[in-house]
Image (cartoon, rainbow, N blue to C red):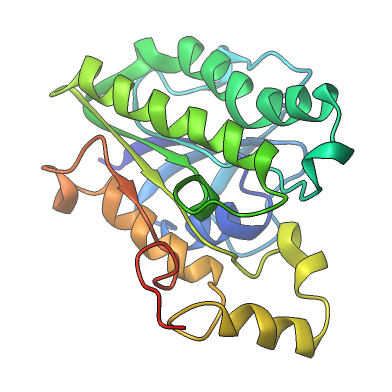
Length: 229
């Protein structure tokens, strides 16, 4: 019998790539504002993380995996950011995730897996990233604490990508010159793809990673650990 997975998000970008990679391997429910646009096999629930209450009656009684995908990239000088900017990013990236996890945690079975997302900007100090680094840093600390609290029954891991070519990052990759510049910043000389992240996600959800929990996996083309300039 296939295991049950709940993904928040997944209509495009990294989430959609993960759905495609997991097709046929899980019974998947996605909850997002718009249905996934692609060749996926999932039940879609219309859902806005900022305004809606998740309808638990439409979820499987038992969940074996949970993924929270919503995120934001607001890159501005700190002096141009208002406190409301930080509050909005925290609501989307962190507080909505915590609220949903509180709701679905009783459904998570033994040997289940939770997957959250951070960013390379938490480990690497980057100008103009103060808001996104703050809320993703909260996710890293929360994820480690949750992993400690629920071990060995539930595993919790975090993927921290660098720039990935998705609709969310399209404004930073909107012409060939900018793509080349962004690629050059990475030791692997390219930006990431949704498939790069999906392969790591598939591994972290599977039994092949059964001895891995509380980890931040940096899928970032070497940016967080290598200095080759």
